[in-house]
Length: 185
Image (tube, rainbow, N blue to C red):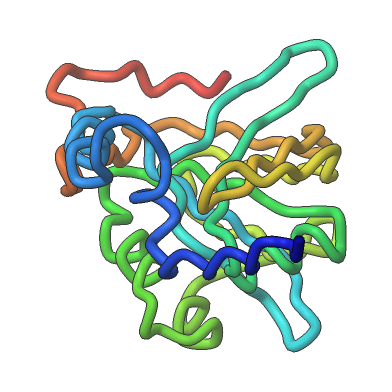
């Protein structure tokens, strides 16, 4: 008796549709209701500075000081973070909405994202002037989950200014409505 014929490959589907649970559209609707501070993550690529807007950044640990950022799979910024093992996270001010949009646009080149933006180098990565706060992190770990990678960074340098953060909620930018003390931490 011969072996059964090999099974035909199933048609390729979007990874989110292959997973059990609610559909991608319902999950994205839930995610839109999460409120987050808007950040820009920057790194040094082989051809110069790279960066992208990221809304999924959070503190992970105070001792040791660790941040967690979620970067889109396939992004040039993620490749630079993995290759150079250092990156910066900038929490944007409420008046930096245009900057956030520029770093989020898939059609804007790296050079266009940084054009006219005051930057300086800290530990070899571009740091954006005027951010509410920033940190430069040494990459501790990178792990893929779905269509993003979790990047854990050990905070090596930090600056905290005063002002109000730019927020992301319900697929649009927003701001706090209550006064925020203007004291640096």
